[in-house]
Amino acid sequence: MAINNVAIGTSATALYTSTGQSATTCLFACNTSGGAVTLSLYIVPNGDTPGNGNIVLDELSIPAGDTYMMNAEKIVLENGDSIQGVAGTGSALVSTISYVSI
Image (cartoon, rainbow, N blue to C red; front, side, top):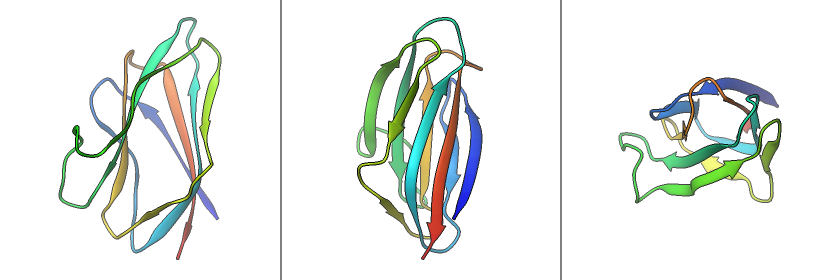
């Protein structure tokens, strides 16, 4: 198992891009700021861009100092597929994604 850590920007930020086939086991988004911050999350097929066709979270509000955890389902990704995020405020959210190669 491996992890990938990325600060989430205010424009589409690649949080994890699969090399080969992989499956995520957990995704954390931690709000390190003093105020609530929104998170939009996309699961993007290789060669596509984030948009309404691949959004999975739309402006979810994460309270100050809180962490959102997504671990109910595994996300199976092909080579080049990615998980991308957009934060409502820059330098406020940090993502940690746990994944395994399959």
